[in-house]
Length: 237
Image 1 (tube, one colour):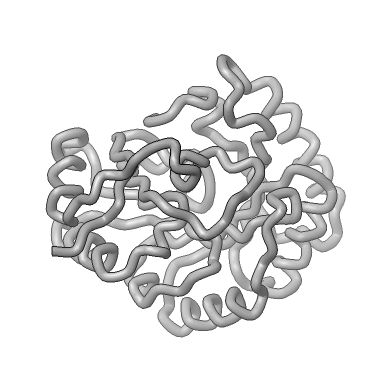
Image 2 (cartoon, helix red, strand yellow; image 1 turned 60 degrees about the horizontal axis):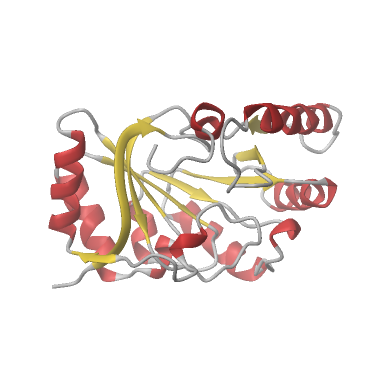
C-alpha cells in the first residue's frame, strides 16, 4: 500500500498566512523538497535532521481524528513540497473528501500533479530572489493554465524580504493579473527564540508602506505571518 512521508500532524489551529488566513484547520506536513531556500522555516523537511514516518492515507486520517476529534473540517497539507508525492497523496485527498473535509495545500509551483485539480484551496508560492532559488516561469505558466482550465480555487503567495523581492512580486502580478496575489512579510530568523512580533510588525509596516505607494501592486493583499505573531517560531501550532 502506498505511503506518505509524514513529519508532523498537528492541530486544530489556524492557518497563519495566504488566502485562507485565520481558517481553523489541521496540518499534515510532509518530508522532502526540491528547493533549498536560505530562509526556509521548515528546513527539517529536507535537511536530514528529522526522519519521516511512512504512513498510509488511512493512518494519516486516524492521527487527524485522534488529535482533532470532531473539531475540524479543513486540512492543510504542507511541506517541504508535498507536490513531490504522487499516488498516495491523491489517495489521501480522496479519503479526506469522502469524510467531508476541505483540503488546502501550498507548493512553490515547481512540480505539477494531476491531483492539484482536486485541491479546494491551492496556494502557489513561487520563491523570490532572497531565497536564492530560480523560478521556472514556463513551468509556472503551464501550471496556471491547467489550474484555470480545471477551475481550481488557487492564488499566489509571495514572501517579501526586500526591494528585489517586491520587484519579483510585481513581475508575478504583471504576468497573471487576474490571479489573486497575497504578499507575506518575510521572517528573517525562523530559529529566533521568544517573542518575534515586534520585529515582524516592523517589517510588515515597511511592506504595507511600499505597497500602498506602488502603482502596479493595486489588486494585492498584504498579510502578516499570523501564527508567528501569536506563537513566535514554535512548531506544531
